[in-house]
Length: 141
Image 1 (tube, rainbow, N blue to C red):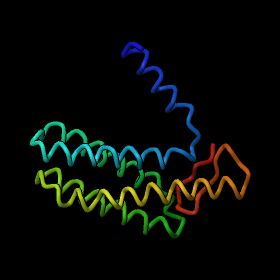
Image 2: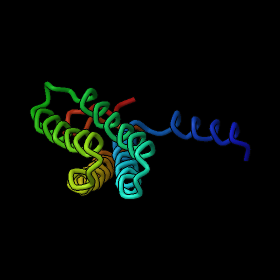
Image 3: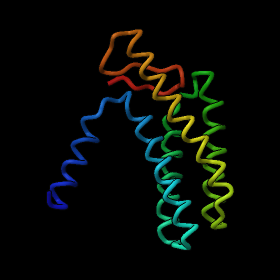
Image 4: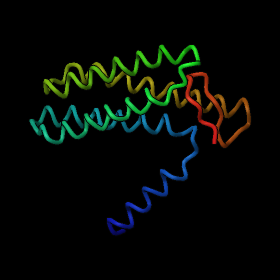
């Protein structure tokens, strides 16, 4: 596949994904980017580390902005996302893996939790096009 063809394939994958899969997908990408950022810091490849960690930071900012703050749990999620974002910023600025190593398991746990929540909602409702999760993020089409 040519690079252009692959980019078109990636775009189609993103554009056709159901809204309920967005949050787990974003969190999975944040995990991957954080892990690659850690590896890049360890290898002293600071340009790659910066790019990867900025991507993870951007994902958390997107998740924070997507929260429906009228839902009570949203404030807690916001604070958690903000805490992890701060760890990523600290690790990136200081080129220190310690805060990044602290952020990574939190991101993994969030990914697993959101994945399980999406699956549970789908099983309970029988819906396949999305719904609103208790986490304060609307995933309806």
